[in-house]
Length: 236
View 1 (tube, rainbow, N blue to C red):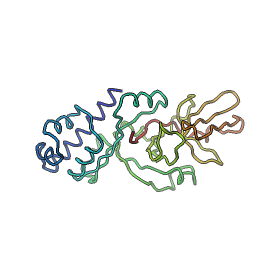
View 2 (view 1 turned 90 degrees about the vertical axis):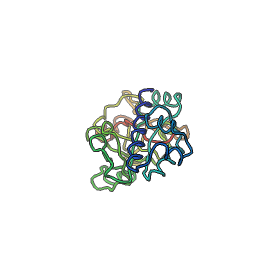
View 3 (view 1 turned 45 degrees about the vertical axis):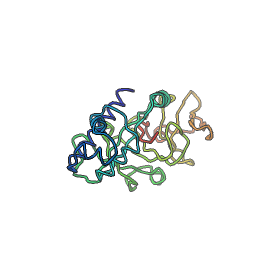
View 4 (view 1 turned 180 degrees about the vertical axis):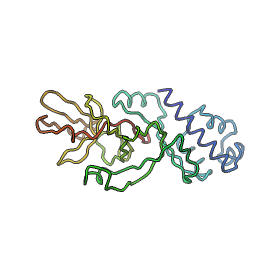
């Protein structure tokens, strides 16, 4: 967990320093504009300490850029997410000006809505609802489907409004992992999947949503499993 947090802090710090330099604002000037000290700006840029969301938003406003990310500020929450879901909270970086994107490190990813995909069960005929910029390691070598979650069945692990990364090449069921699945009369759902010799069970994390059980004989697994959820971007 410490390694993930340090990587997030470092990436945010690099972005702040890059944008500050492009805006031709010194650390001291940025400190005065934000009401912080020079030392604190230095520590943020070097990834040496955590930053509250409102401070990052203030810095982004001053530098005239947009910075969005998923950042877990407490170790217990990080452990809870990792243990329960086997998915990773990852940083996402978005720039107002595309010329600032380092294409050797980052990749623009279209984000889709399940309600649109359900019409054709593919993204070929759908229009993205958003675009995010991710480190290339999270692009899953072309097998990624990024989707905005618009339901609450997997809260608190995956919140309504979160972006998730689905690996379409990973469709082997490992009981207890989180998958995107398709039900002919239920649409596309995000659920924990469990399987035995006779039945397949879809479990929600939110207790207000009942579990769904289907006989294996009634399921075509090749079309039922869309892919496994590998990462999530959300505010915690």
